[in-house]
Amino acid sequence: MRNSTRSQVDPFIVMDVMDAARRAEDAGRSIIHMEVGQPGTGAPKGATAALAGVLGDNPLGYTVALGLPALRARIARLYGDWYGVDLDPARVIVTPGSSGAFLLAFTALFDSGDRVGIGAPGYPSYRQILKALGLRPVDLPAAPENRYQPVPGDFAGMDLAGLMVASPANPTGTMLGHAEMEALIGAARAQDAAFISDEIYHGLEYDSRAVSALEITDDAYVINSFSKYFSMTGWRVGWMVVPGSHVRVVERLAQNMFICAPHASQVAALAAMECDDELQANLAVYRANRALMLDGLPKAGFTRIAPPDGAFYVYADVSDLTGDSRALAAEILEGAGVAVTPGRDFDPLRGHRTLRFSYARATADIEEGLARLTRFMAAR
Image 1 (cartoon, rainbow, N blue to C red):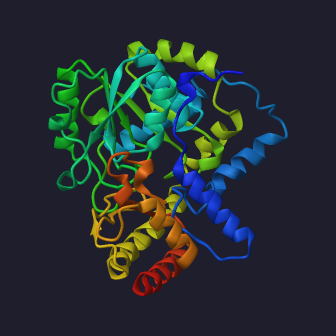
Image 2: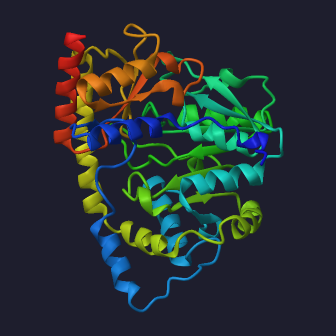
Image 3: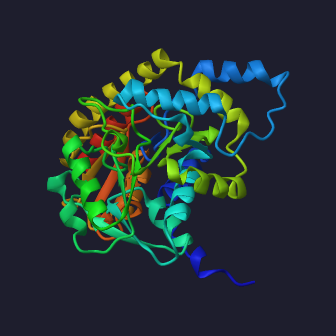
């Protein structure tokens, strides 16, 4: 049986690293996980308690495609609390994770063959989802001096149909300030390109607050998720905010693609938004881990890094150590018992000389991982 040309997408290399780490653990080895962008904590206790409370008398059937009205209203209130934005809940669409939001956004905004700019390094699934939809991802190599964030000059004259940015970014954790975000929105508008802002790491910030595109314009798609700050990766629930005139377009697509996001996850997500004490305690762990990483990685020999503003990653240029980051990652896993992610996932052109380190796990794991890296690199 034939396969479509659209199905010829690249593998997600971090998943291969995770599988190699699992096999090592199955063989009895102790592995410190710095490869995966997943909180070491689970869903907030209030979220699981809320779901348990409705399981006995609620069939948890389909919801409307746009999501539970109470959840949409609560998400809209978050934009007032965090950004001072008065958001109409009617513009909020609950999705099956941010991945579902990407599918809906790309399908609603673009036609086959359209060119969509994405920053490199960047989240690899942008590129692969665009390819699978018959769209043309255009990598915009972001400069280290711009902290690996795109600037208007990176796509001047490219005739893009869309521009996708992320702040805080994966894999770098760097953020766009208000002026930088505004400049990108203006440059996209000048090309008549749709602007999409991936904000799934909002809430995970250390020295300054992340800027939402909605503080600058209503003419954008904003995507977020309960996976990162709210620590609900496996629940597969996210959201998107779209211009009012696009709601019905996205609703029709959501009805046919997904019917709705999981009802149980929506119940838990609504409760999770009231668990701020627990979520801030998680953030305090990441803050401590970040300090350990910024001190420990250079001591281990990884000196070329852009200090992260948010998320829970450090992106390191390892060109002084190797020309093949995938081989180096495999060497580190075998020799140090630490799983890290090679940069080819995030930057097809330059990723052979970069590594991503995640510090989303418990502080004791980060301390042990850094100690192992230091010993391994000293003996290498």
